Image (cartoon, rainbow, N blue to C red; front, side):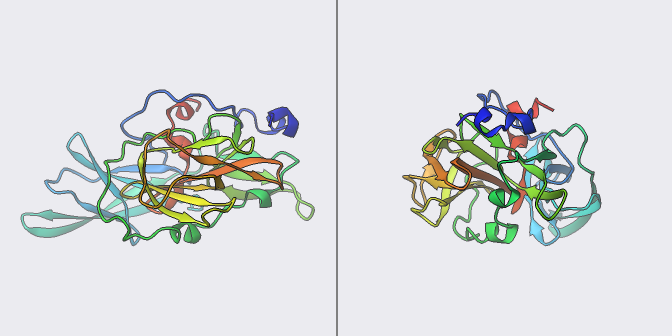
Amino acid sequence: MSMSTYQLDRFIIPVLLFLLPVQGWVDLPKPHNFPGGISLIPIGFHEQKPQAFFGIDPVLVIQEDGEWLAVVGVPMNMIPGKYMLRVEYAEEENSRRSILPFTVYPLHSKYKQRSFTLPEKFTPDEFLGLDNRQLKGMFGTDAFESELVTPDFSFQHVINEGSFLPFGRILSQSDTQDMRLQDHPKITYLASGGTIAYAPGNGIVENIVDQGTPDQKIVIRHSDHFRSILNFVNNSPLEVGDQVETGEPIGTASLIETIGTGRIDWYLMLNGTEIDPLLMIDFASKQE
């Protein structure tokens, strides 16, 4: 497939890019306190690892230079404003609790993946994803009780050739509406059918949904609170329980006849919330 064939470059350059090799990683993701991003919230110095909760859901807690940080995924449909993080920790053999405020801002004007226009050939319905409840239902929380590895936030693109539609909001026209805005909470890769797909990060295969079909979904648990969900993975040799390493072949892109090309979707879940995978890719972060 070439971008000229589908006239993708005419509509979403520079958002729609040829994929380039990724070089170098950072220890922590860059904080993006807006919908679809990540909030890094300092929660103090404690001898024991505290627990943090956003609403009723536990969030990832890591230690950096002796201080504990909560790594919170910001849902794409979240209204900007003030929010609270609940922290529970032990102090002198007593349990303590604190409430920490943090702010979610509107989408930043410099954030290139905030919205994009679909090419005329495609319709939003062809890129509809599963909703968050369905994504959460793909894996069981009791499958692997211990954290596999400390998150290193080191990810790479799933497909190394072709093009992609980024995480963001799709702006498009339809027969019944002049324009409509719709969430696209993933990266959709477009390439030739049969193009090799690679694991975006180290982890263990936690679940495989619709195994053996063209829309097969593979859930990779990278660490506690971090998962990738890969949709439309064909010809995969993986089984539940297999360990994978970053860059390991995991299958091929399924040919989707409705759009005339191969496709794979990559959802990156933090605490059960879809966040932008491009925030975890060093090359992409430098394009802002």
